[in-house]
Amino acid sequence: MKYVARSDWGAIDTGKRLKDFWRPVQGIVIHHTTGPSHGPWERVRGHDRYHVQTKGWDSIAYNWLVSGETGEIFEGRGWKRGAATRGWNSKTISVAYIGDSDDGLTERGKDSILTAVGAARGRYGDHLWIKCHKDFSQTTCPGATLTEWVHSGMTAEQPHTNTIIDWAAILRYVTEAGLTYVIDQPIKRGSTGKWVSIAQQRLNDRTNAGLKVDGIYGKKSVAACKRFQSQFAIEVNGIVDADTWKVLWVA
Image (cartoon, rainbow, N blue to C red; front, side, top):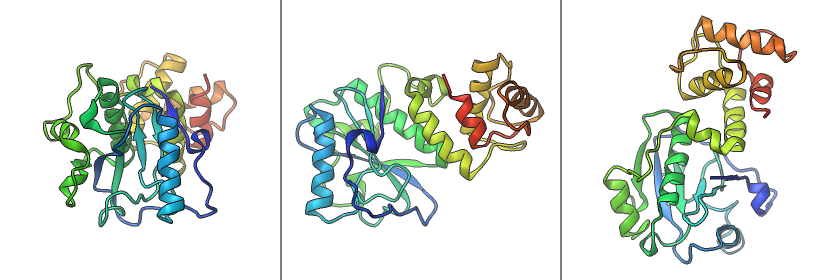
């Protein structure tokens, strides 16, 4: 599984700044792009060209796109407001399966969707619901196969959990998405949530800190962070800020 940034797949630079969400994010909407699923890089570029050059939009519509062929996760608009679900773009994250799900929804694709969902919930909270595009408008998107999977609870043959074990496989994604999070909300004593769990696990991985990975940043987590900061010549304050996060994820 690989995270592919906009700059890597060649997103069109329109010179326009993508808009932030102006409402609390409420949920995740699953789409498919239709058409062939093979050659995901060119498929993503093709959708970008269509949305920008034909539709006149600021960028590709989707927040994230996943390949059932390769398992790659492509950054569309990332954590900026999308344009894929009319009436809901200001409060939802869109995840699109590349191709027509009715032509073959792969286990690799399912796992990548689950990873994208886990990332969104890690950033915005476990309260995010998951629905299909057809739940909001007169469309067949994301196809009967993907709709059935989503509505039946989204299970995969390989057990998937939204933990550091899964996200470590896409190190670049964790580094960049986590950095965005801690810039906005530095992790300090009293912080809670999945990004805290990820920081705790990473401190364990890097320093054998022996922390309980419970998503609660207490005094033991603060102490472990201070030891790490001292070891790597970072300002010793016990806060996982941008500087500390970057060093945590240096291989």
